[in-house]
Image (tube, rainbow, N blue to C red; front, side):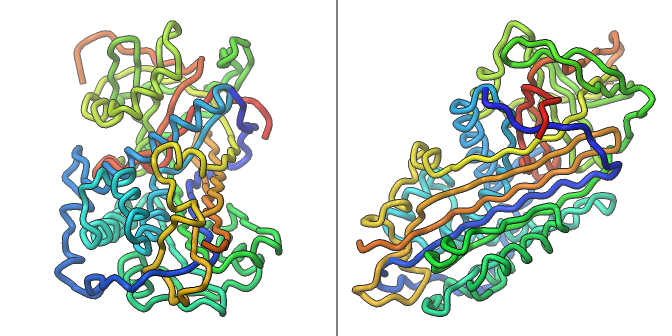
Length: 432
């Protein structure tokens, strides 16, 4: 497994954020397909699709989790020795804005891969808006912020319906695409200087448009780990090496379950709506099989199995940086036309002449960061989808949960069951 960066935690506060960006360049355009009025209040009120009762999952959260876990699984398969960390929510949020401009078979592929063909476009966007508002106001003890922007070259004019649709449902700012520094400044502002996205000048020159989603999260454990209990301990990496890491330890009541060679524990943040779930396979089981099962639907199933039980939890402190280019992963999952200069159809996005080159996706770059210590968690992610132009509690013995071998972890909103981040730790001390 190609390994991600981890170094000792320096800060005592916890910040978790993520960024997803979609960059596009111009290509020809089809006839405007009339879209439902984005200012239709009745459509925007479909909150039952976006948020749900505690312990249940809405269609939008389910779709976001499903896509993110399949991307996570594919990333791990290509980098089996690496720490992998992605933001399913951020990737999905950015792709929804892209989806709003797609037509014909390009949209049909997004329907099949992202939505399982089951969510109408206005319901999808209204639900995303309601979910975002729900997460923003989820916990006064935790900071969760999301921001969206659409960057456009002066030579490109957005279609009014596309612009209004994304502004209303996703609060997307319309900004001029002129310099790398402007995008970088926006990214830093909306991640509180935790993420930088300084693109090369040549990249900006070849782009006509950029859709960017940013997420910022800051929270502390509901009960912090005592620093005095953190000790050096063994961790067996994915390639079988024994290394020393800083292992944190606490004893309390936690939501927990174990079944068929798997242990899982839930560590809450703040008022306990946001949680980190850690999935630890038995030594005889592979982390790959666990990740494949999560992507195949077990994440939703496991989420219903946690129950309160007292026990000891030991997890390593870790700090990771991760980067991957996701276009091949998305193609493998079935989104291919969006990347084709000949077949991409984003005709609902911009006013283009019949003989003008079309908009199509060329590259999807995803970068993330996470840091976990005694106080809580800090994390960030950036996704850049670049486009080129081209013609055409139980009375039993307390459990013991010691994460001393590779494990999967996820940060989740436990009300909507939205998967905010997920990752795998194969080596908690490898330097960034």
